[in-house]
Image 1: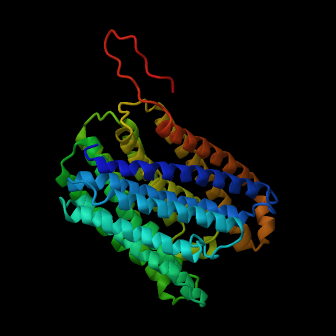
Image 2: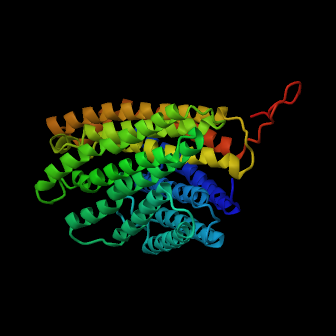
Image 3: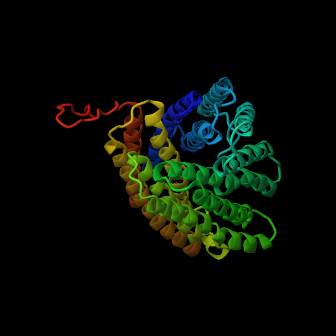
Length: 449
């Protein structure tokens, strides 16, 4: 760690990991309710649990993005942050807003729009926090060195913050409501967040592989171009059945097919950089998470997205467990794993505990990734059966759900593996002590992990 102001990232990462724990535990609870629908039905209804699960996911990923920016921008700009005080104020606003939103959900106060359920005052708080962040990080970059990594990161963060304005627009017409809703949800996860992911991946690989910056930047610009080209009009695959004109079926099908390309390029980029670098960096856990993130993102967002993105297929499959399979694997690969990659790289430096034993960290990777992969396969099979029974044969929805119980049991088991892996990762980052360096002839051993 070269700059003192980078320590701001530590507070963001700790808060992000706390919400990560809440998110996966909420998901496990929701998974059990699929098996036993009346579980906690009066005390904590399923719709509230799902709100907490999805909102915690979004907020902790955003906290991870902000922490990553506060960590990498000083190194890229070669100067301290413009204001650490503003960064902490922003964090307080986000944490208070998150707690306020959860408290509101628990007493039945919410906006009712999936992912955007936050009360109006919380939405304003998030907007103010985003503006503070943009000012702080932009002033830092403008006063320092400009690189492709900071340019792309800033573009992604500015766009995702500006798109949040659409969260305030809630027209009475349901078709318009869904259009504006997807302007936030899709253009975040399938356009602007991809820019953030690509820039963070580029920074990590630059540090871990030692490849020339010029090569990394060329790849980065190509990935950005394909992400924006495909992602913006690819929004059309959400407009198929909401009352919009028929041409969206063609626009959505064609451009969302192209959305596979930037994820394939990111996967290729990661492996090519590692191959060209041939550098044995001591932080192998961060490298594993980086390669794993780009690979799982390609399959989750790319391959599983393509499975049901064409309008002829989507007519039957939309809103089934196939959608859930795609959503879980793509979020995990593209954004969860990438956040865990930058945390794995930055935490030993922020906590001054490098070198450290990475066994638990790497074990958590395989537990979470294996659990998520199994969950994806289970939900894909469940969704295929659901599509046939419900959309083709015409069986009643609840009869179909009863037929899928075995798949929901397997999904719960996979979710338990993910939760264990997540808690293991958090333990490896926040609790495990610095490993001792053993010199020849020394009897010292690494502290018990």
